Amino acid sequence: MREYLETVLAPRLQGDGGWVEFVSLDDDELTLIFRGECSKCLILDRCVAWLESELEKKFHEQVRIRAIRKKPFFWDT
Figure 1 (cartoon, rainbow, N blue to C red):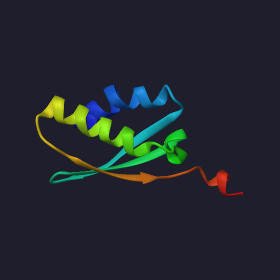
Figure 2 (tube, rainbow, N blue to C red; figure 1 turned 135 degrees about the vertical axis):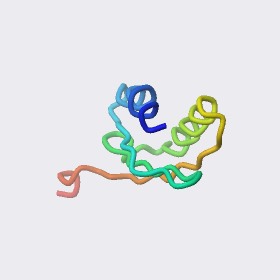
Figure 3 (cartoon, rainbow, N blue to C red; figure 1 turned 120 degrees about the vertical axis):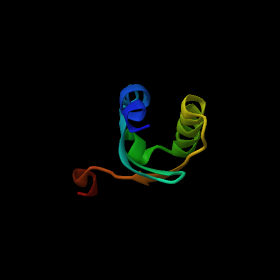
Figure 4 (cartoon, rainbow, N blue to C red; figure 1 turned 45 degrees about the horizontal axis):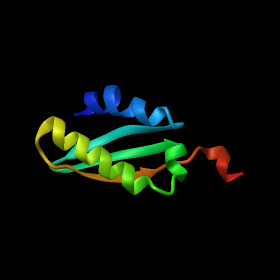
């Protein structure tokens, strides 16, 4: 699942200036860090729902994504 996320789904997010990093997969909970434009996106919940549906189509199992927004340190200054 990690490889599919990093090689197929993540490049689609990069096209909009964001990126996603795999953190962990515990049972049915997938933890991801969203950076770049994703970290400040107002519709991240739609993207998360899309990712969940794409993963379900590919692996035939439901996962729930725990999204963590992480902005670059220089955005705080």
